[in-house]
Image (cartoon, rainbow, N blue to C red; front, top):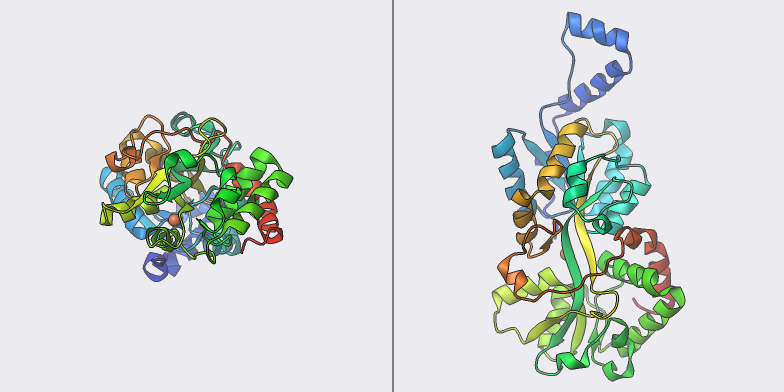
Amino acid sequence: MNETLTESAMLPSAARTDLRRGRRIAALPLVLVACLAAWGCARAPEELVVYSARNEQLIKPLFDRYTAETGMPIRFVTDDAGPLIERLAAEGANSPADVLMTVDAGELWFAAQRGLLQPLDSAVLEQNIPEHLRDPEGRWFGLSVRARTIVYSTERVKPEELSTYEALAEPQWQGRLCLRTSKKVYNQSLVAMLIAQHGEERTEQIVRGWVQNLATDVFSSDNLLMEAIAAGQCDVGIVNTYYFGRMQRDNPDLPLRLFWPDQQGNGVHVNVSGAGVTAHAPRAEQARAFLEWLSSAEAQGQFAGANLEYPANPAVEPDERVAAWGAFKASPLNVAQAGELQADAVRLMDRAGYR
Ligand code: FE
């Protein structure tokens, strides 16, 4: 569910008119001088505007902290990434947004492809965020890491029986696998990363094998999938770790556990929630400073911990509940490939009958 704050988070229309006027003036230096001398210039308001696909409950405490520490107010709009990206594109140079925040690298890649994000030259972000968790061209940066891994029934599966994502396609798992719908971007990114690793032909075999092994129709959420495993409808599945963490927090006796696949090979599939500065950000400098702060040791624990994710900054330890699941080797592939190969992944899943 989205907490859409469209109304409360919108800038007053007068402010947006000021933005437009400010830009027109900036394009005409002579007029600018006259404007400064005669009336004082219309300026972008002293606040940052964030379009966020990350839920309000996760981001607002951090925004409030940033405002308390720096005096910079933050206005925000939350929605799914798709509508936010369309909105940015439609607003063009008149957009009040400074920052776009999403919960999947594929979405950030897509926004960058559409020219909606600007490259940042930031030694701080390059220092804090590992190379494979950010755009090679500096237009977006991962801020938390979400692992999409195997979850299994502790009642019907021994961890020794598990090995890789690929092995879930083997006949041993016939009628025992549960998957979330292929419409969810998390699975599109997972399959895109499998294509990056194995190529299309091998990946299609894997996905076909998964489909053959399904115990039941695909689920609309990771939570329903885990409930199905707990209820005995299936024995294994693939989920984002924070959904498992939330369920475990509410039910410590949950008969489910996480497994880290492919530890001798490419490692666990990871994705990021992250952000970039918009192409027409009225306050690009302040927006960069804000992203730098979000990547810092100071903010990373809270950014990741609020959702039981892993900090993107490797200098910061995960929340102790997350650390309790054990260390793992994560895929070193650049998460940008989740975006680059997403269209191929969608077509492949369709061919393979993964609905
Ligand atoms: Fe999620």
